[in-house]
Length: 142
Ligand SMILES: [Zn+2]
Image (cartoon, rainbow, N blue to C red):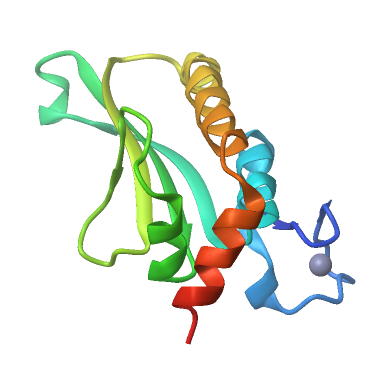
């Protein structure tokens, strides 16, 4: 996992000057989501992909999880209703994610499968009006 700086639209290496709090832990696949969120005024902490075996694979399925950890609850609220498959996860109210039960796939196939889900979420973010979202964030900031 690498650190991405959405402010300067670059991967952050050791010499990068921004504070850790401005960087997002993620990988190349999720750069589009991280950047789109940032352009809406929404700051992510990390965006990750994971697969966990369900029921020790007795049913031959895995659970695919995409995890978007946002830096504050108000960022989650500003997104409003999420596309299908996406939900607000757990009680932290900072985390949204996508989960789906899928057949057991090799990691490469999982990544390929995920590409479509990522694209849909990017399209969802593209429908958001940045001015309206930023205005809403201003109202809810404290
Ligand atoms: Zn930076």
